[in-house]
Image (cartoon, rainbow, N blue to C red; front, side, top):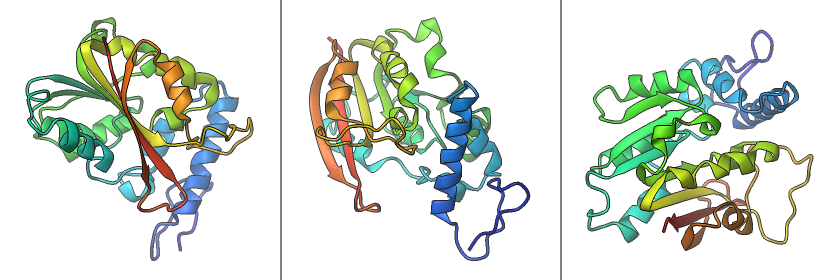
Length: 245
């Protein structure tokens, strides 16, 4: 398997396959170090820059649109009327496949990520797309984005941030929606009966349905769906669909 080079950073020499558990351990170390240094989101740039454009070193990069997002489109927007020429915002866009998937359905898509390296990578991967790629911080979004999007999509972002900043970041999402706009959140589900230990290792940190509903009290929950993970058999995903009044 892979061996670390230098100071145990992500630029390891691969002999056969990527050691996914070693990557996850390293990411958790990055996240904890960022928290201790008072910048809990700094590790996002760190992992993208250290990956050296190797998507196998980004555990959440499937290099295709999220299947739960596309299933939602097929189940609820199959006539295409909601999507064409409507504005969508992709929160924490990662390597860009979800944003491009929405753009290919006819939406005008803005996609942002905190990591400058990540956004540069998206532009390299999709040089001909109409997606507008931007570096931005969810906690400090432009004022002109408020009430400006028909669809806001958050996939695996809230579950990837520490609990001390999670509520604040979640509160930034509803103001982005236009009247009648919709919010789609996808992540790992935490059972309602299970508490989140203060010292629980992560990311990710699975989220409860009740927490999501508390975060978005002014939105209407239209659907909450559980889905087993096809790769990690002990994990359950959720898809939560909200609408602004």
